Image 1 (cartoon, rainbow, N blue to C red):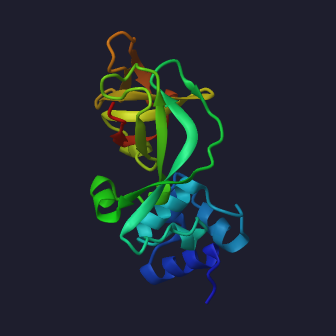
Image 2 (cartoon, rainbow, N blue to C red; image 1 turned 180 degrees about the vertical axis):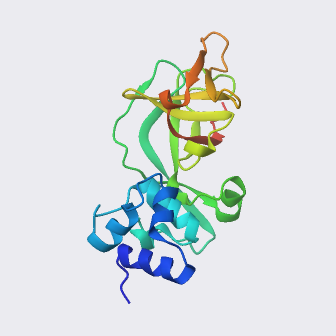
Length: 215
C-alpha cells in the first residue's frame, strides 16, 4: 500500500466518504485543486497550512501527508522544544537571522500538553529584547511560541509578529465586531498601534510561556 501523500489522501477520502471538491473549498481553493494534486501531482506538495488543516480534519499525522516526522517522546517522559537563533524585540525590532532551530529545553510531556495541544516541533523558544513589554516580559526572558496559534485562532493575547525584516512581541486586542486590532505595549512609555486591519498583521505565533533568570 503506497505511503505517497497523494495516495494517502485519496485513500482517506475513499474510506471516509469525502469528496475532492469539498476538501478544496475547505482550503479556500478552487473545486479542482485537490483532484489535481491527487491525480496529476499539481502542485507537487501541499502548502504547510493546507497540510496541517487536512491532517486535523482527518485526525492523522502531518507526516503521512508529506510533513516532517513527528518528534518522538523521550523515554523519560520529556519532549524537547527547539530554540531559534532570533530574538523577538519588545522595542524597536530584532532583525531576523538564522531561523534553524535546535533542541534547547526539555519539558514534561503532560505539562506541555496542558499548555497547548500543538506538537513540540511546532513550538519555538526565542529570547526577548527591549523593554516595551515590561513588566510582563523583560529583556533576556525566554518565551515559548505556539506557531500554530495564529490565523483563524487569533484572539486577545501576546504574540510574536513579523514587521518587515524584524520580529516583535506585542499584546493584541481584538475588536470582535469590527475585526480590527490594537497592537499594544505593556510598558506605557511606548505607543500603541490602534485600529490595524487583520491583513496588516503577520502573526508568527502566540506566546504561551515565559521563563527568566532571577537575579
